[in-house]
Length: 139
Image (cartoon, rainbow, N blue to C red; front, side, top):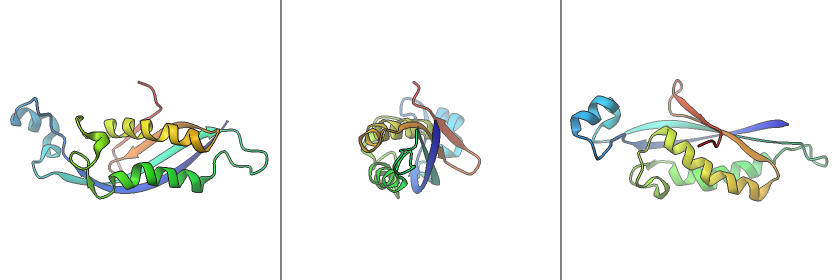
């Protein structure tokens, strides 16, 4: 099994805020991330697929096609957007990095299967250089 990854980048704003809690509880749990005026991140997204290299191309997946799928179905939907307000697939849920990476998986898995026999292995999403989430499709 060969694992191959593609990295993409986007910028987005969000606020961590549970509407069922008081302002005080939100500040206590989320700190400055509950700022009423939002805050932003420079996200790095790494999508890893796995499979056997095609005997004719040597590719597990054509990285140009993978990049197009990621940009079209994810990056273009979130880049320079407010994740809480502007991104339909995030409506009704807390815009945490954990929830975001699960949403990305649900979007990308069928798209990758459509273009390649390779399978989605993991998605890693860096919110900051020191904070990231990695998801393997397990719920």
